[in-house]
Length: 87
Image 1: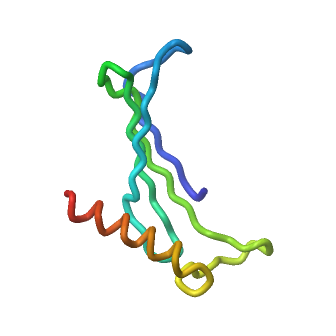
Image 2: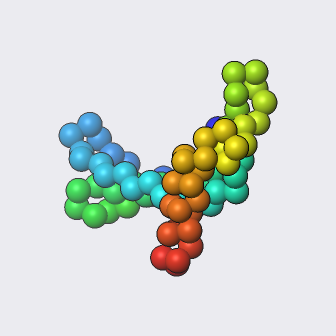
């Protein structure tokens, strides 16, 4: 993970049911940004967050997903495209 941002809106307790929706906000081949929306069962938003990730090999070098894992690359690209068209 290269960055994380959280905006807490409301507290939760252990008995609360919390639902988490995760969307691919942006994918540029090496960097992936995810958006999270967390809400209680009653629909009240408790947290909005974003995280940014990059993909590394065992030696810590950046991985080009399109070359090494083309099917995974395509899935992430498709999810990012769906998010753009939904806006």
